[in-house]
Length: 182
Image (cartoon, rainbow, N blue to C red; front, side, top):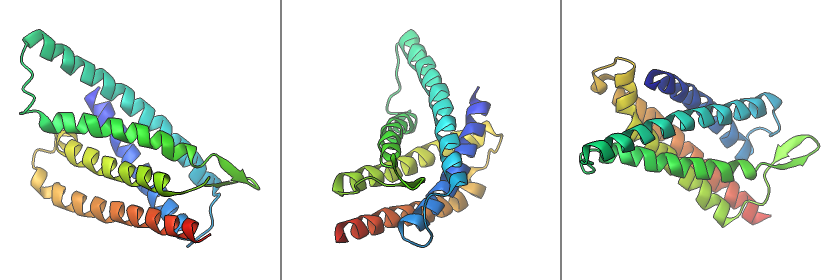
């Protein structure tokens, strides 16, 4: 089950990066919104996130049962595990709000509803939650795929993700400024 969850996570990450870059270009006004293919990919991403979350919840429940059975939590030793689970909860909640922002349509093209300070905060929180989730889950994911040497891949992965996440955060801020100017 962990391997299937790891495969789901990698698929989500690829689709998320496509969605994030395309969305950032749309929000920054580089190209217009309403692309049907990107809309379908967004729904596929949400479905994969739901499956990933369901497996994650099951694995977390198994962990909690094992903690209760043993009577020892090792909370301090497993702080990355719990940070990953907490950030997953933040991501799930903020993704729901993020999705609701796109319910408005105009001539068949999806448009954002009002985008003010609270929406900017939620989206920046979503980006931060995703960053924490990926950073805390990267080592267990690589181990799941049989990659024992994290040092070979971690720096490259983290640099690429950091640049893309900063790009997304900047796009949300640019879009917020454009909305405020209206």
